[in-house]
Image 1 (cartoon, rainbow, N blue to C red):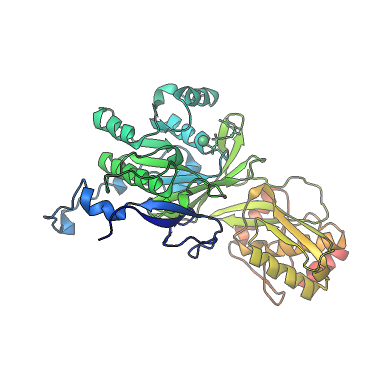
Image 2 (spheres, rainbow, N blue to C red; image 1 turned 120 degrees about the vertical axis):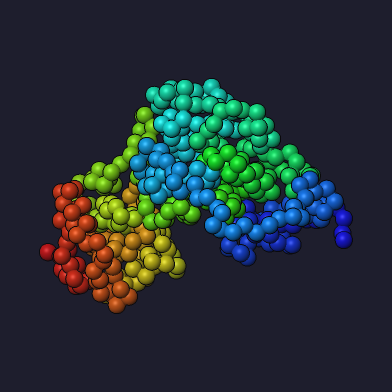
Length: 439
Ligand code: TYD
Ligand code: MG
């Protein structure tokens, strides 16, 4: 057996390990995410602290008492409960990921304000947390704050305390370190490294299971991968939530990327304001920045889980001076956007091959519902023709041949459009769309 540390390269994005460095991770395709790590794998057998139990027995399932599901509790934040799938399961571990500044600490502070719990503050001082609690007009008595950057301190706190917590928020995983690995008995590597994050997460999971307490781990998503991304711990936790939105706007969307205790279909919608995040029900979500009919704008209703949401799509089509005209899609899948631009060129006779095309969706929403195809096509066409599309709502999936297909839950979309004072356009072919704009 070789002795000493071995050098491996770990992708900050997906956590895969490689023996050689490469500019691009061959597992997930991200660039510049591989980091050199001194692995202590080979030291394992020498210094293992907790050895395997040699007398481990198999358990007959009938002897297992199912307590977890029945203990599920509601947080009182309806939008969060829905995304989680009817509340929080005791002992579960949730990764709460999002860009810095999106509102993670705000929402989780509001959560503890409602249900009571422990706030493990790695980024802020207790005073800073208190300031936010005060600003959000929450009851400070609901908060126990543990200022720390060491998982050992969190563990020793739980070993000593008599208090019982339903929930602990760890803000954030990138600021909590482990000095010594429980597995190898040696150092765990640099602050914020992949190994650190894995080790701390593993130990938080042990705490959650042992105390039957839900643990919410905050993870900052950084595109540059300067600190290890939370992606590497997605497979370790029960639920992965992503908090998204356009930071310059008010709207925030909560999605489940993985959910051991519910579906990943539902989204939660919030509005960031002076007093923190408020929940938005259907019929309240107005992502349309202006009511006037603009050139290059088309409105659609997308379904986010079981909820209809009216969004505006904006397109800008300009003459291109490049041999490779630009195609920029914000909030729309790149391939889907390319496909729709090709349909516009072919079936509407628009020479997009010599145009730059930019398409974006308001409010930082990501379009996952193909029902918005028709609105994308309409917005591109409207910009090219320099004529507004009118106030109608465009709903329909567009096929490669330029056919318009009916989409699911049309009635709910129609109802939502009416609630917002609009009508869904009755358009069954691209030709009808072309006509509707020239008249
Ligand atoms: P925060 O929850 O600290 O973000 P994260 O933890 O994801 O990094 O929120 C940061 C932003 O939210 C900050 O720019 C201030 C703003 N904010 C409000 O607009 N209203 C509020 O009531 C609070 C507490 C924050
Ligand atoms: Mg924060």
